[in-house]
Image (cartoon, rainbow, N blue to C red):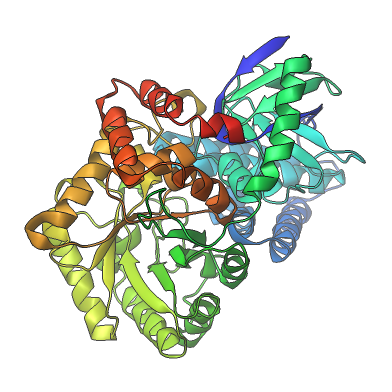
Length: 561
């Protein structure tokens, strides 16, 4: 048996046959010129038509997707109309370069620029290359890259998956996802978790496996084994039997001794919220409002925004819905709000900071939130992303008060916010830890890069200490302000126990993870969770922190988590 170690990002144990992603579109020959009977004007028109067709096709696919998948498709569709990409290609066409070669070279230039910027923008580099290939395919009149067709379920293997492909996976056909590249917070990882598919990323060498090879995938352990033996077949069968135990969430998150830990859902719109409610979510811990703004060249009206927000509020009458104000910038650019030329967007004007450069947008969003709240029965809490200081928290709280919003809060995703949580929480009513960004910023490790996957994990003791400091700050001087977690860390059942032990009051995650987290939480008492938190904090590395805690939670092995 040949084993390929990687980083597990979504639990599950399955056996299936490999289907590799088709080989990418071939590069047009260097120096390829316009055909003698084609003018530059005709080639430019064909190029723009192909880009429009790619945009329209991706946008159409987005209308049939929901949640993370919908947002990814809409963002990628925007890239097909990127001014820098198309203008760069048109300039080359004007010099006599063929349309195919022109878009290829322009795509390379834009992708390299984004990659060199690092952080979130490096992720967009992959989107550009995906769009470039689709435009070339459209110009050639051949099928675009995509998920292979199959009459039987299979394990999808690739070097990496383009966002537009990952977003439209059919979980009835794909048994598991395996990539040689990518990181634990890549598009592949996030979509796999939202679909409930076992997934492993950063598994070097798997893209060399031949189609038809039978493999065993363990999404929790992060391993792939070719030609599995009987023991692994038994493990897969046991997972299939126990997976049914994780199919439903009873609607109450709590430890074995009755300590309540409400389990909430991360959503991007009304359809997500309705699905989360059906899966038993106790409310919404993160409503990503920027998903309502994607594919817009202009700011939506207050009335349009209010209708979008109300669709989420209506799914949870009488329950808490935590709404995050626009987290635009970095990987979520908005033409009417953000500057695409920033040298380092991950550290630039994003989230709350956009109110300094484009004042008025946040005020109008808060007005829309208040309007939607008046028309619904949800308990609406509102938090700002990228808050770094107590002064910023105080200003945001004042803005909320002016709009008639009673419960303002902040995202803790910048290390300075964790370190000064006591001062910040004097100004607002609650905090929510965005562990994806908090980890990235604390470890100075781009969360999309496979080579940095071992650094970019919330199991890092340094990150756990920042979580603990935030909770301590919330309790200082009798504040007693609630601190939740809405990053991907909350979806890891073992880490959920540690977070509970650190004093986190609520956990928010993709709705498909609710049942697994609830099942593990109810096997430990609060004091046991606190001991496991101490154990994780004492570990010299993230690897040991995770291993030590998992060793104390045998239920994880029993459930294949």
